[in-house]
Image (cartoon, rainbow, N blue to C red; front, side, top):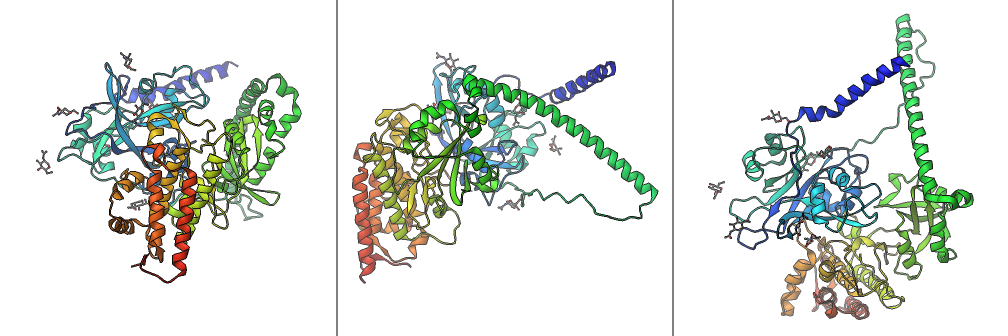
Length: 633
Ligand SMILES: *[C@@H]1O[C@H](CO)[C@@H](O)[C@H](O)[C@H]1NC(C)=O
Ligand SMILES: *[C@@H]1O[C@H](CO)[C@@H](O)[C@H](O)[C@H]1NC(C)=O
Ligand SMILES: *[C@@H]1O[C@H](CO)[C@@H](O)[C@H](O)[C@H]1NC(C)=O
Ligand SMILES: *[C@@H]1O[C@H](CO)[C@@H](O)[C@H](O)[C@H]1NC(C)=O
Ligand SMILES: *[C@@H]1O[C@H](CO)[C@@H](O)[C@H](O)[C@H]1NC(C)=O
Ligand SMILES: *[C@@H]1O[C@H](CO)[C@@H](O)[C@H](O)[C@H]1NC(C)=O
Ligand SMILES: *[C@@H]1O[C@H](CO)[C@@H](O)[C@H](O)[C@H]1NC(C)=O
C-alpha cells in the first residue's frame, strides 16, 4: 500500500511536469485575450473588404480526418477544399496533420460604436452537447478564432448556457490585403505553432519574412492567428499515397525452425515475457476503461430513459425511444421500422466503405439496397415533411430506426443508383450528360418542386435545392433529396439562415424571408450549372449566378446567343443543339434569378416554359434545318 502511494506520488509529479512542460518551455504564449482583428469599414481606395481569402487547417483526429466532416464544418463542398489543397481525390481519408487550405470570404463586420469593426469570415456552427465556445474555438476551429471573439459576435448567446442544436457564428479570423500597387493578392490565416519561427512560416507559404513581419509585427505568439500575404496559393505537399492499414501479418508460424539453439530460446522467452507483460498492462487498461465507461453509460442511459425507459425493456430491445415513438406514431403504418442491428449489419457497422456522402450510407437489407442517413434527434422535422409528400421526383423514404443509446435516428430511403447531379456535372465521369438528358433533369426537378410548392398542404419549401441534392436514378431521371432543412411555414421570417452558398437567394440571406421563391432562385442556379457545367462558386470566389446575370444583360439576341456559345459546357458543345431550346432554358434561368422574388416566375410557369423548350429541342433535332442550330465547331 505504501509503495503504491509513493509511486503514485512520483507519477503525479511526472504528470505535472509533462503537463506544464510546454508552458515552461515557451515564453511566447499569448498574453491577453484576443477579441478579433480590427478593420475599417469606411469606403476609401485602400479598402478591399470583402475579399476571398484562405485559412490554413490541419486534419486532426479523431473527428476531422476526412474532407466530408471538414467541409461540413466550414459549410463548403469537398471539392472547394480539395482543389486549393492539392488533393486529387476528395473522398480518400486524410492523415492526422495533413495540411489543408480552406477558402473563406473575409468581410469587415461592424460590432458597435465603442468596439468598432473586426474582420472575419462568418462560419455558422450548430452547437452539440458538451460544446463550449472555448472547446469549439481551440479544437474544432484549431484556434483560427478565440472564445472572447465568439462572445463578441454572438451577443445573444450566453456562453455558460448554450442551446444545444442552436447556431452560433464562429468568426474565423482573416484579413484582406490593401488595394495598393505592391500588395499581395491573398492573406492566408495561419495559427502559429510552438515550433514555428518567421522563416519557417515564410518557407512554408512561399512568402518573404519581411512581408509577414510587415503585416503581423516581428513577435510571434503561440496559437495566435497571423496573416501570411501571398500572391499565389502555395502548393501544399500532400502525402502521395494514403497509408491503408494492411492486414496484420499472421503471427502463428506453424512448426517453424525446430533447431533453436539455447540463446534463441532465451531470446524467445524474453520476448514472450515482454509480450505477456504488455498484454497484462493492456488488459488492465481496457478493464479500467470499460469499467469507467460502463458506469458513465449506465448513468446517462438512466437519465435519458427515466422510469419509463427502464421498465419498457421491449422498446429498448427494438431500439426505439418512447417519446419519439409517440411523436411519429402517425407514420408507423406508412413506414417500415428498421432494427438498429439490421442497419449495423447492412453497413458493416457504418464502415467508411459504405459511406455515400456526408452521413449517408449504402446498405443492403433483405436483398434490397437502401440509402441510410444517420442523424441526431432533429430527424423528426424531415420525417414529418416526408410523410406528407410522395412523388416520383422526390426521393422516397422507406422507413426509419431509432437508436436511443447514442440518441441517433436513422432515415432509410430508396437507393438512387446514379448518384448526385453534382457528381455528373463537376466530377470526372467517363460519360457526360447530353443536352436532352439535362433538359429532362431540369423538368424533373421542376416537377418535384411543383408538387411540394403547389400540391402539398401546407406548402413545403425545400430551402436547399442544389445539384448535390438532386439524385439520378437508373434511367437518369432526377429526384430531389435531403429535406433536412425543409420548412412548412411559408412567408415566415427566420433569423436562422441555412442553405448553401452560391444557391441562397439574396432576400433570404439578408432578411431571412422564406418563400417558395427562394427554391425558384436556387433552381435557377441549378439550371445555370446544367447549361454551363461550371461550379456555383469558382476558385476565385466568384458566384456563378452573379456572373451569369452580368454576362447576359445584353438586349441584342444575337450577341446573347454568341455569349451563350462561349459559356456552354464544353461537353454539350460537341452535340448538335437547338439554339432555341438553349436560349429558352437560359431565359428561364435568368428569370428565376431576379433580385425581386415577386418578379420570379412561379414553378407552374417554369414547368410550362421548360416543357416548351423540350418540344422545341425535339422538333429541331428531328427535322433537318440547321439555320437555328448551333453546330459543334
Ligand atoms: C483609408 O482607410 C485606411 C484604413 O483602412 C486609412 O489608414 C487611410 O487613411 C484611409 N484613406 C483615406 C484617403 O481616407
Ligand atoms: C456575418 O455575420 C454578421 C452578424 O452575424 C453580419 O452582420 C454580417 O453581415 C455577416 N457577413 C457576411 C459576409 O455574411
Ligand atoms: C489551441 O490553443 C490552445 C492554447 O491556447 C492549445 O492548448 C491547443 O492545443 C490549440 N489547439 C490546436 C488544435 O492547436
Ligand atoms: C460593444 O460591444 C462590446 C463587445 O461585445 C461590449 O462589451 C460593449 O458593451 C458594447 N458597447 C455598447 C455601447 O453596446
Ligand atoms: C513595388 O515593388 C517594386 C519591385 O518589387 C519596387 O521596386 C517598388 O519600390 C515597390 N513600390 C512600393 C511603393 O513599395
Ligand atoms: C526556424 O525553425 C527551423 C526549424 O523549424 C530552424 O531550422 C531554423 O534555424 C529556425 N530559424 C531561426 C531564425 O530560429
Ligand atoms: C501536390 O502534391 C503531390 C504529392 O505530395 C506533390 O508531388 C506535388 O508536387 C504537389 N503539387 C502539385 C502541383 O501537384
